Length: 338
Image 1 (cartoon, one colour):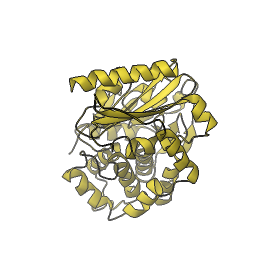
Image 2 (image 1 turned 90 degrees about the vertical axis):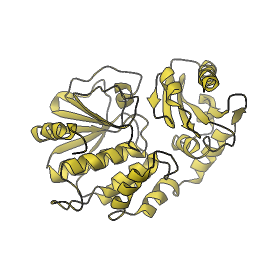
Image 3 (image 1 turned 135 degrees about the horizontal axis):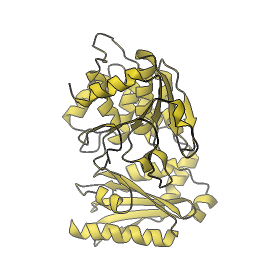
Image 4 (image 1 turned 90 degrees about the horizontal axis):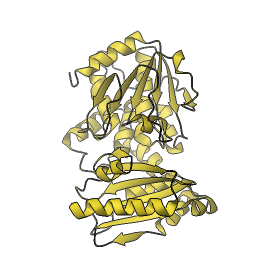
């Protein structure tokens, strides 16, 4: 047994008739892939009524995962303030460190439903009745791999159930940035080796990273136009305010590309960030580390969270210039203490 809580989670699943899963606000591929994988197991293996709910749009480049699944995927974009949770028995919150990450809008108000948390962020607030949180995992997808094994569900097991591997491998590839991060250790690679027997790494990489539109690439270019270097504190940053975002019709997915492949690749830096004002006076900022620098302490001070190497925060009800000053001063505070 990898996690003693696995049996407790399984007991709750068996008792429940209608189950909700989530994709967190501003979802990445690990969020979507983890929800799809658990949806598959719950629907096909346990024959449960499952709905995946989310507050924001889902990345189009993750929809290919559905083709690898046997069970139906029911997706529902909702307003968490008005949705009727009483019609469901159980909510499993995935890849979400807090209620704010689940529902967005800076709202940490608890939802009146029995909640289980499955996550890999060390900043997780343990907001569930049962919490399986392991920050040694590369991704929530990798964590689910071991939980499924605890439930006796694996390709070589008694059930020979192999319809969730593409989803799990997608989540791992995304959160390890194609195995570039230090968290992609030998344990992770053993999991990847197992999953690759039933799924195509090349298909996943093609969809996640090699299916960009020209518009997306132009958005990346615009987001990099303001890139600057703070040489005294060894970090770089770039930003887009609301006027530029709207004027240039930028794609939100481009922000993730800039974060994952550019701001953590600048020579002589420890970390970097990109700040984007997609709505007036609401600034989303993503941090990425190039070294062992802990970006999560910066994100947490700004009201967010995440991992050492990947973290994020959203600043609300603040002018863009003030938000950028606040982000920079917080970065400099922790960079000088590093």
